[in-house]
Length: 252
Image 1 (cartoon, rainbow, N blue to C red):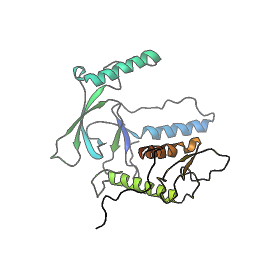
Image 2: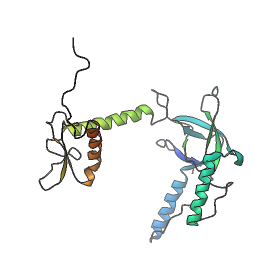
Image 3: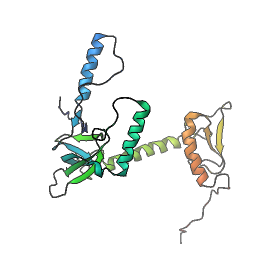
Image 4: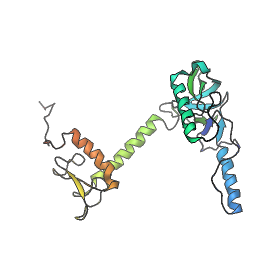
């Protein structure tokens, strides 16, 4: 099955031939469940495309067409790939699983990928060196392009907007936290619960009074507590932290 669905932007690609089965540990007790699992596996396997000349792939958010894929000569591997191969052999010697890695067949051996910008014959092809087992995002012949920046989705603008929306939503939730509640989870801190309080101005809620930044001393609130502690220490920590700062640009 090589069908592309309208909602399917990419498939997985690589240099190795498509697999014919998926290795699983155990199987369902029901015969029909086993049959459904085999059908599901077929659909998973159909989501893989073996790279060859003419296949469209994504590189640096842009569409490229594969021109050529060749093996990197052994004398041109370089120190980085030689070291990785030594590490693969050392790992095999410890585990003793499968066949011993050989340079000519090792799945991490370097290969040369020659890619041409799709629809831009005036530009020079791109030569990349990467491992044979590198996973590529493969595009269909009809793909989406952002009209604002010309990148493939999700483009940088879309990701920036998503981050901005998340930060805005987080700020709105933070502003809804009442005084005396944990700045991490937003819930009240009872007398029986341990808490960590930071002296000085409240860096996340400047509208709160001093010494009001407090967090639950439990594991699930440790990440925001750590984030606040970093900002608090950057401001001076236990040293006196002023609430007022000099105006570098005073009004005339």
